[in-house]
Length: 180
Length: 180
DNA sequence: CATAGTTTTCATTATTTATTGAAACTTAAA
DNA sequence: TTTAAGTTTCAATAAATAATGAAAACTATG
Picture 1 (spheres, each protein chain N blue to C red):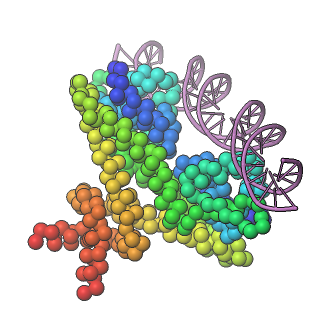
Picture 2 (cartoon, each protein chain N blue to C red; picture 1 turned 180 degrees about the vertical axis):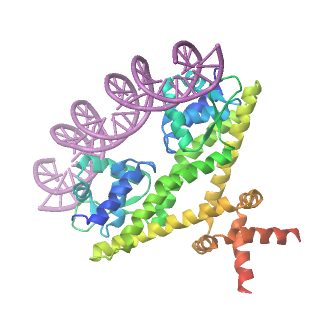
Picture 3 (tube, rainbow over the protein chains, first blue to last red; picture 1 turned 90 degrees about the horizontal axis):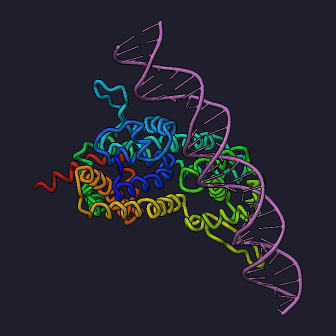
């Protein structure tokens, strides 16, 4: 199978973006390719479609699996492994978020806590600690919130998403109610 | 000035993370260094503190300025330029968000729109377009929301942040009100 | 307008990261 | 148990990215 011009452009774009989302170009391309391809693909088909080596595909698959972005499927009477996206677009976006949180935010929070609990010895250290505290609080808020969003039911989520500029109004509303 | 062990660890960590947030290791270190240093620093001080070349610092400064993360200050009677973070931690986080949106999401949205408006010629293209449409909608929602958050007053923002698990309740509440 | 302090540029070099492909490994079926 | 279809590994190589530092370009000041 050969990609149409538009689809090719999309896959290449995923490559460019991929490197900004935590994996490298090739892996981004693989991900994009699997997303726009209706049928699951074999490793060789992926290699052909992207003109990359079989070994490279194998490594990419391993990586995409570690991000829980693709799943393996089997076809009866066929020994090859077929790969497909592991869920909807929304699922995948969530996975990338979760995974990046695990790889970036969590270690950072841990380092910040280590630094903050220590007694500051002088003014410079005191200032540095204040700053780290701010970063820490910000990251913790983000963490709490992302966990919160994932806990919402799909209906609530949709409701929230549609809210848009209404969010401010709802907040004001809530405050008014609470004051009573 | 030489960094304390803890502060050094923080700066190095910023370096590691920096590469995941859109800039390279050195630039991440520079950013971290400026954040935990109370007084604005000269380019030479930065170079010394991080043991990197003067030229490298110059390039890093340019990059950090393009992200609007640092500002220049002058001291009367001193020809050197002094650099400091451009705003609070929250401001900086916002900038990184905005800037990444501009560099990653916007071009992606544009490419997706180009592909979606085109008439699909066959089933494969039709499927690909559906998927792209989903990505498009997701990204647009994210975009709308981030714009929304930036429009909130600091008080509203804080109120929202404190809401935490209350968000579900407020949503349900809102729905109930609307139904009446 | 010459100078000295300072910053920027950019060709070269160093480092890091990604890719290849042949060999090793795995496994279902004969 | 052997075979062959398929997958993975990893040392070698290629490609991309970052860092250096000397030279060029600025720019306040006398």
